[in-house]
Length: 220
Ligand SMILES: [Zn+2]
Image (cartoon, rainbow, N blue to C red; front, side, top):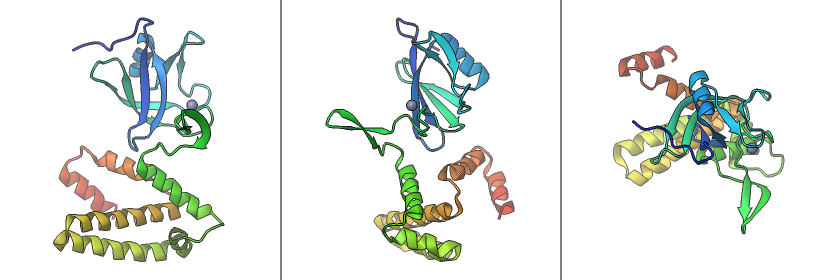
């Protein structure tokens, strides 16, 4: 047992990460009191170095961070908050504070692609949906609606099943990628987020195999 290591100003950096998607949301400082409040309330609370006071994330904006767990690094001098964000985490309105790109050592306002790959892919598919410019395979699937996407999903699931039975690992990976891609297109068509899917999986995690299977059968 050891305590977190606060620096000579009594502070420790705290990184907030979406517990489901892995997206890094923001970094701020905590003092001992901020950490205690975070742990007792389950809401991320930080210490403002400029105002010399505690602030609970979202207390004015409503965009709070519900803290699922707090993890320390090997030296216990950095904290990782695994969170469920309630709205965008950056004061600019962006989901994550990490949205500016470094080009040749300069920070430029060009959207970065720093997020977890699957979220980037989800965003790309969503952009195709609203794009009026180019025709793309993704766009044609979305235009075809649930029936067209459903037909592709059945086809891709069949191909993955066949690969699992008798084809190489590379083929299994390729067919699984096809299936996941079409799942994302189907979700985009319905406006259901990837995070919602992960939330269902996480909700089942820890339930017994039998209970989990029964739950799945019930929900069809
Ligand atoms: Zn920010």
